[in-house]
Image (cartoon, rainbow, N blue to C red):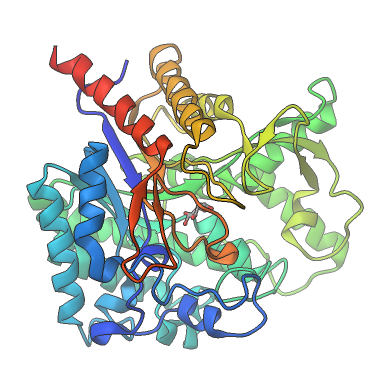
Length: 469
Ligand code: BGC
């Protein structure tokens, strides 16, 4: 069922694997600052060195080749390329590094998919207000144009922002990701809004300046769980589950694919809660200005990061106040039948991916879809013979196959998260998502394939062989 040019990939992100946090002129990012502050969740762990891919890229390339990937998704570190975030000063060493990565991939017949922003904002831009400041959209557009101009002759798949939901909510409402803000009920909406504005500007730049010569495609990676009613026979749970999807997938999917604005259910919920709280000072969920390019139509494909599923109950479980959770007024819970892998949040539900893909087809106008992240992690004692994760990949890919073959979803690629064990944000090195184990106690950061890595390689080669017959 997989088309012959299906993208078989794995993904990583700069801060999680590169290290070299101040090597060769790189500027600090908000994650450097955040990790160097005391009192964060994962103790003294940082991404200062992590897999050291900045120096050990050749080893990563060997891993990519061993898996037989056709595509590799990486992110560019904005402050490695532009240390103060602006094009006033370009760090040539950073350009050389990514040129080598891109050229090496291509010489091995692996196509790069490049994310411009995977959580690591230059600290200098944060000092000017970061994602909360409207001016960030122009700064991002400059950076995006710089990247299209510099790498776009060889990169044909671009993602502007990775998971604006996570970046906005965990970074600006929950405070567990950089920049560590806890401004519940306001800052996340504002940050998400500016990410959409930034994305739309960058897409328009690509469209008008580079598309005709470079011929690539640009999107934004949206993460969402599959959400369904806890009690399907209860109307309140049915509408709660729709509302919950509106606050995750819909928050970014609707502006890009449906109306150019946030889902009605989301705006209505935020506004209703604002009235109840007696909030003054304009809508907390911002309004898109007519003087700017609309986000509608600014995604050339749907980029989906899917990890898990939830059942949804009406009501926020007794919580009351100014927060996104209270606005949404739902509770997302685990089905006791689902198994959990290393992280408490990660229930293993491959079937949820098929349902979500079907929903995307129906809701967003049958777009081309790339699954830009999906994975399974371990915690605790290291298990290199991870048969369970191998089965997870096999079952998940079968679900994708059914989505294509039986539901007619136009899925063009699948990227496993992640190529390597790496710095898992607030969880540091305690969660391992890699297809390759990385020994963080070894100066050489030795990479060793897991059994699940071998399994993924076997699956890829099986499908490739089916087409070469
Ligand atoms: C992010 C990755 C992260 C993964 C697993 C996604 O939210 O894009 O950076 O490591 O999920 O938590």
